Amino acid sequence: GDSVTQMEGPVTLSEEAFLTINCTYTATGYPSLFWYVQYPGEGLQLLLKATKADDKGSNKGFEATYRKETTSFHLEKGSVQVSDSAVYFCALNMEYGNKLVFGAGTILRVKS
Amino acid sequence: NAGVTQTPKFQVLKTGQSMTLQCAQDMNHEYMSWYRQDPGMGLRLIHYSVGAGITDQGEVPNGYNVSRSTTEDFPLRLLSAAPSQTSVYFCASSYSALGSYEQYFGPGTRLTVT
Image 1 (cartoon, each protein chain N blue to C red):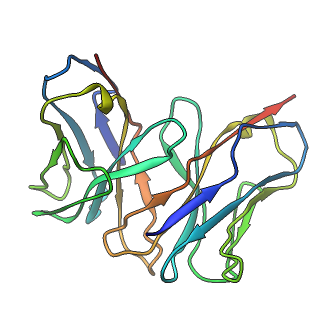
Image 2: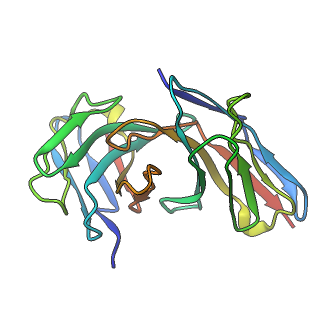
């Protein structure tokens, strides 16, 4: 079945460091790909998305490029802030009915 | 626009008790879903609905029932609570627009079964 694999955390960075969170997927067709963020005590918010190969999603300084050849959708940010501390989820969707398949989540901690 | 709302925020049940988690959305979305979040496992789909009167099972449906009598509401019923159902539950709604299927999540219900 369809699945998403994310790098394990927690990831601990100093403020202004470069961030990469790896995400790879397995799917039988051509999924849409998403990154969601969950701040402490809150629900999930969509961070960015890409719907076809070579699309780049971007938002709030975060970027991810849909790489069909490597089945990847890695999340990057050039300079993280303490306020970016959260749990980040990679997810895919390819079926009628909007059934998201999530990775396990990666905890990001940014220290000042 | 309130978006997706869930009640209650917190709930403690004893094993064997039943209860209903409420979910409502005011965005006229046709799709609604229930997920549970457990540490190290991400979110897993319990049940989903593609419109009023239509529901189907997700990845982990056992022990839960749903119904969708209106577009706005999608309650999740625990028939006989078990400690394995201790989790955080999220409701989500979405619409299809250019195939991207963006989902909007509620704030969650933290359930503890003792």
